Image (cartoon, rainbow, N blue to C red; front, side):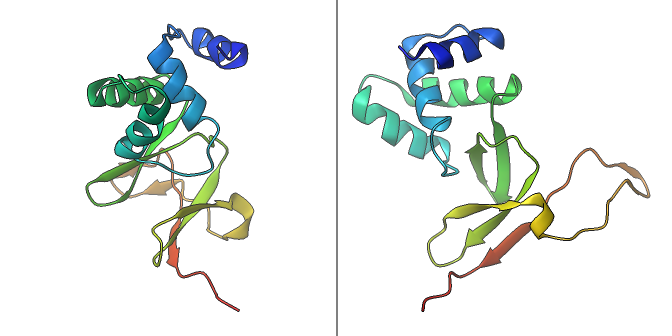
Length: 133
């Protein structure tokens, strides 16, 4: 058991069960932005008896407790991001891979208010294709 991950979970009031530890180990140590099914596929290779419901419930708990963020970057699909620093995302249209883009690489005027809305957060989602030499 990774004591640092267990301490992190406990610090957020999450009981570090074996299943939760397996999901946390993967999601906190990947640069990918996996959907729940990708988490299930990866975790089940080393933890074969983990269920889809357990993975979904664990990811939702992690989001609720602020350990990770759930992102709706495309219609009908939620991906998870353990990078809680302010940043933007770039989706490679040729591979579907999501890349983190430093906050200061994209210039956006600070949005504090739009009539009729209280702005809680914002980010830019870029779409592009990796340049091939």
